[in-house]
Each structure stands twice: as structure tokens, then as C-alpha cells.
Length: 152
Image (tube, rainbow, N blue to C red; front, top):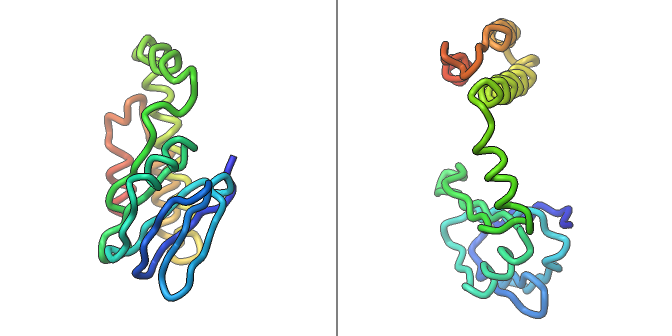
């Protein structure tokens, strides 16, 4: 299980060699793939090899690609994270709508709560508004409190 979040921000070439991520730029750096949890490619001037991407997927390492403004643009995830992935998906598909709605509600409430925490020091009024929105979230978020919170 990896623990590192590797962020690549400069022009370089990323390759795979002997279970290492090799970063080639002005200097060469090697990082053991087993230590990586997430690879963030935050530059459009990075080239990657297919063997590296395959090795990252085999180790269930998420790869996030950013645009020229460093905003996340896409994510590469392996199809098969664990041996029981199919069972988990099948189990979740069979949930009834009430349970799905409750889970959705709790996810949205947590997202809004985290947004409010980030705003607390910057803008107390906005923070309080988000806390109000969090308490108003309904099952399936029919009132679109998530969208209103994002707007704030």
C-alpha cells in the first residue's frame, strides 16, 4: 500500500524500470512504485510510457492529469481494484432507492461540511450559509444544496 502522493510539475519523461518510476529531466530520480498512492501529472509537458501506466494500474495507483492551469482534468483508474470488485458493484446495484438516497445525502452533507471548514477563516458569513445548506440537504439532494454550496 503506497503512502506517497507524487506530483510532477516540470517538463520530464516518466518511465518504468525494475519496479521504479523513473523521472528523467535535468537529473534522474527513481521512486519505488510500491510507495506511491497517487501520481499527479500537473504539467502538459510530461511524456509517459505505456509500460509505466500499465505498472501503475497493476498496483492500483491512481493517476490524475491536470490542464495548463493546474486544474484536475482527468483521472486514470484501474478496472479491477480488488478481487471482489464485481461483488461490491453487484451488491451496491441491488440497494433500494431509500438506502441510495440516504448514502447520497450523507456524502453531500460531508462535502458541504468540508467546504465550510475551508471557508471558516476566510469568510464567516459564507461558512454559516454552508452550514445552513448542509442541514437542509434532503434525500437524493432534490433541493440541490450541493449546487448552491458550490456557488457560494
